[in-house]
Length: 121
Image (cartoon, rainbow, N blue to C red; front, side, top):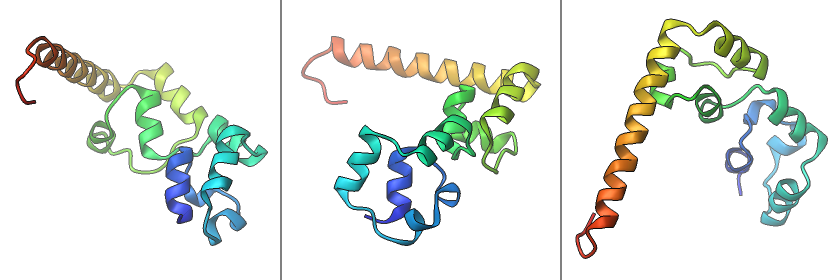
């Protein structure tokens, strides 16, 4: 698979990975080995970043669209994410509330569908 695909599956930013990872294809067995026993570079990236947008959004408890609305386009490090969580800027409070409402509504809708067997979603 392409290195970009492997980086997404590993939850890391491709540009932050070692050169030998970026330049060649990654086999399924190599990916599985990294998932089972992460190399030091992978553990370091997961611990400190920079993190890709989906990881940043999850750590902040917002959606990717919420990051975009806030103007957060660049990858963030774990330290930057922690700083945002401590500072609690107005946009973060608003986006976390919005995200929580959407998730609650999705869960309610899923429960409603599960309660009505035989109906198509």
